[in-house]
Structures are given as C-alpha cells and as structure tokens.
Length: 239
Image (tube, rainbow, N blue to C red; front, side, top):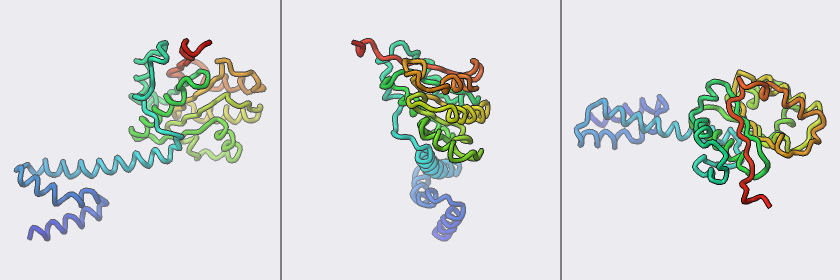
C-alpha cells in the first residue's frame, strides 16, 4: 500500500516537474520517519531540495545568457591596492537596491585598476538575485546597435546591462548618437554599469563622441547616477 502511494507521489511530482523532489522522496520520507519529524518538516525539506536545484539551474542559465567574459567575485578584489576607495560604499552596491531603483554605476580609471572586476562582480550578484544581466563591450554594443533598432533586444530590456571599455576605442558621431539613444532608452527604466577611461587620461580622439556621451542621461545630473568610483593606480606602480 505504501509503495503504491510512493509511486503515485513520484508520478504526481514528475507531472509538476518537481523532478528533484521525486528523486529524494523515498530517502527523505524514511529519514523523517526515523527522526519522528512532523509532516510539515518532511514537506519543508522535500521542497527545499527542489528549490535548491532549480535555483542552481536558474543561476547557471542566467550566467550563461549574461555573456560574462570571466567569473570574478568581490571577495577576490584587493581593496588594499586602492586605499582611496570607500569599501563600505562599494559593498553597499551588492544589496542590489540600485537595480530595483533603476540607478546606474560608473567606474572610471586607467587600464588595470579593476573596473571590469568590480562590474563583473556586481553582474554575478545580480544573476544570483534573479535579475537578467547582459554584458557587452562598447565596441560590440555599437556593432549591435548598428545592426538593429528593435526595442526588444537584451541590451535594451535587461534589468542590468554592463558596458565595458567605454572610450577605449574612438567612435564617430553616428556611433556616439547610437550610444546616446541606447542610454536614453534605458534611462529610469533599468540599470547600467559603465566602465571607462574617459576623463582619466584617455586620448581626446573621439571626434565629437565624448561630448555627446557625457551629455547623455546616464551622466547627466546626480539623481540617476548612484555611484561613480574613480580608480587610480596605486602609488607603488608610479615611476
């Protein structure tokens, strides 16, 4: 009789696409009986198993679709290398409130100071929190903006978009305008993280692009700019 009930439970769990719960049903039921646990406790553990597997799968899918070039955590970031940074303010970003409020983050600094590291760390945290993330370099983004003007692309609709290497390569006035349109579309609808060497010694060979970009809504005023960290090389690296 109990075997019939177990088989029926497994069948119903499979129909509900609760495959992990079906797999561990017998083991958890036996353990619950041995420990004389309540029905609610048994059900709680069973569902916890299912949720854990689904969350792991969801996170893996989110990471894959985000297109991150590598996986870097904030724990790996060496704050001692940048003593001028306010670690408390940086860590506060990881509560993800800036995404819920549709605010933006900008990291400015020369190459090699960890701008992309911080951006990727935030992106991974966002994936873990269930936000859809899209990572792109400025060069790739411009190419995609040229290809299509559809408003349903991931780089327009994702709650968080990371645009890396803004200002590393020169862009013409049309490309700058496309980026302006991109930022304008996302303004107060979603969040964007920018990493850039603009204003930090980058060559001024961007035609009129720098002026246009810096006037775009992302950079205009403090209401929408949540955080702007200027990262500079540690003095031990300066000759």
